[in-house]
Length: 418
Image (tube, rainbow, N blue to C red):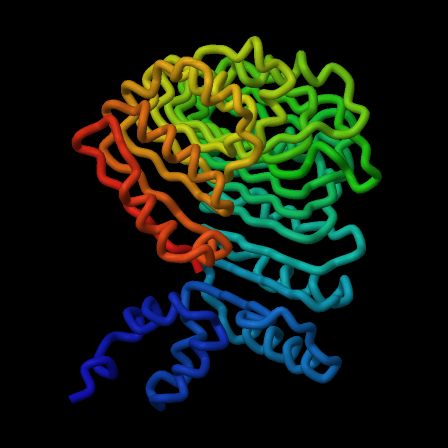
């Protein structure tokens, strides 16, 4: 017996909402009774190439445009859970605008628009005044200021990727006016004149990636962050002048910052940044450029329990500043100097319980050996071996398992990476 066919259309529509619109239409061919059910699906996912990065031919683009026009004409659901439009080919402005105008009067909880649009694109203002909008994701086009006020009382998540702004005001106003905002991602955006502003009393998660330097290699004078409720901060960028307010609630930080050529006052700004995040419990340092410039003045991380980093010549100073460290993940072994092994072991080695270390050269095994030797409370060490290390033979694998250790309960696990 076909139980699915006996389900009400509303339930079938809900099930189909988890598929792309194209897949939902194909599924409805399976039953005559379902033939038009896709027109009532409360989600539209229109993606030009869901499984391919190849550009469409001219003929394929025409087919895609006809498909989109048909979908937007026949699906008339007034309240959508999600509207997604992703294109990789270059369509004319009028075409894209007509698609968005077709859903302008509807309510939706999530808006996801990714375009390849070389001209300034005016996102219909209706999209930035939705009472029910919770998630907003925009990628790949230019946005004008569109005025300086927005009404998005329920918006919690904003992702902005490869967006060209017309100055500083759009982003500043958008974030300030979203009184329920919890998560903000700004990735590869540019067009700021003086300052990238992020000011929000509700924001809990903030990620900024590659926005400090624009496409003319110009470093932004200021990145201003005033987010007193922040729990997670990720900065992956050239080091700039970060003007950061109090972060007393910050729990986790990810810093992958590098020194941009010719940048002045790097030491002062790097130290200010590190001091602001020194109360975190979890920290990842993708690069240690931000620390190297003031290695003699590293602040204490009194609450730090988990540290991820690349091991280089400042690793001893970093470990000395983390008295409560329990988990250490060494993502890469770079240039650990001889001084590291000759100095007194950092105090955190008496509290360290878990270590993961990625090794790609045989002589880096010395670091794993040292940690096992001085970590008296260690429970487990996982060693990840790069294929170039494994080629030396099974002797490497066996020698790692037999490394002497100070902790009687420590287990060593060796994982071969493909």
